[in-house]
Length: 122
Image (cartoon, rainbow, N blue to C red; front, top):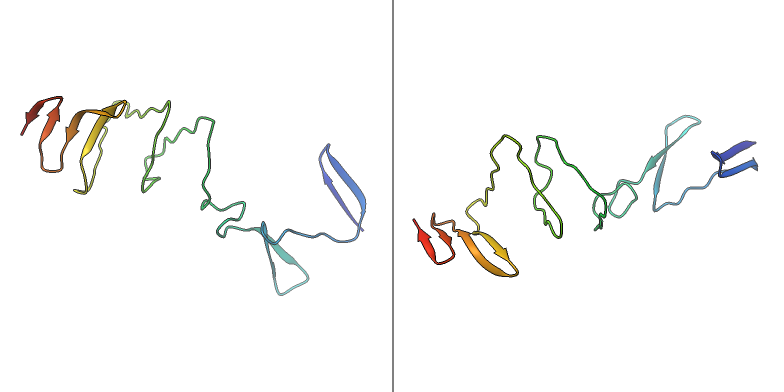
């Protein structure tokens, strides 16, 4: 007999077997009497990072690594470099454009030209 419980929520002392949702878990034999139970890390599994997510809380990324190939910030968002430089590398594939209400007021072109309002600097 197996006892299954979720502390303070669920308790069943008459369980004869356990079943796992194949979309969320991956089970494999270990060449013994044991079965290995893993979270499904594949596309769409609960441990997968391949799904679109909406995050409403604050995520603070402070590691000194490259965490994204691309990122979009919307609404209240901030980037702080502290006492370090804040670098944006476009890899010669476009311009860095600063807008407010869809109106451009500064452009850093990959040709090396900086435009601020109607002023152009080379």
